[in-house]
Image (cartoon, rainbow, N blue to C red; front, side, top):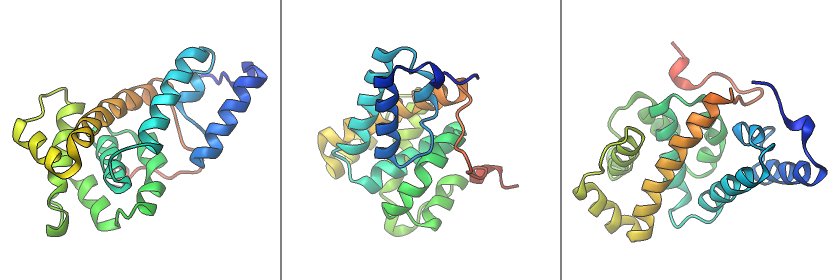
Length: 180
């Protein structure tokens, strides 16, 4: 898809630059394709910023959920965007491997199976089983449980936008599911 950033107003160009700096990324992927429609760009940017920087979920849980959503949808851009931040949030290589391979989590991370089940249900447009939601509620509170469902839905939309606008992360290698 053709780039649109050459057509930005100075104000919107400054907003895009600030967003890149806040996220520490060389590109904003699909967000940049939305810039010709400033109101839409600002609404989606506000939602992404809220969930990413003002979440009630622990950062590690949020990043795990994003990686699961990326794998479930084969969204290279979302994996590449969150791979570094997930490491900074304490997601180990072994946990990332279990996410990519779809294998059971280590015993100390067994509670994350409910996070994976929730993300899978949402990206597959299936109902989250009540027992799973109840366990999420017990772990993260009602707001956290609702936020996890919403985060998965948001990253479903983000993966679709990334695919539609051919979003890529400059300099990033292929995602782990493409490694033979």
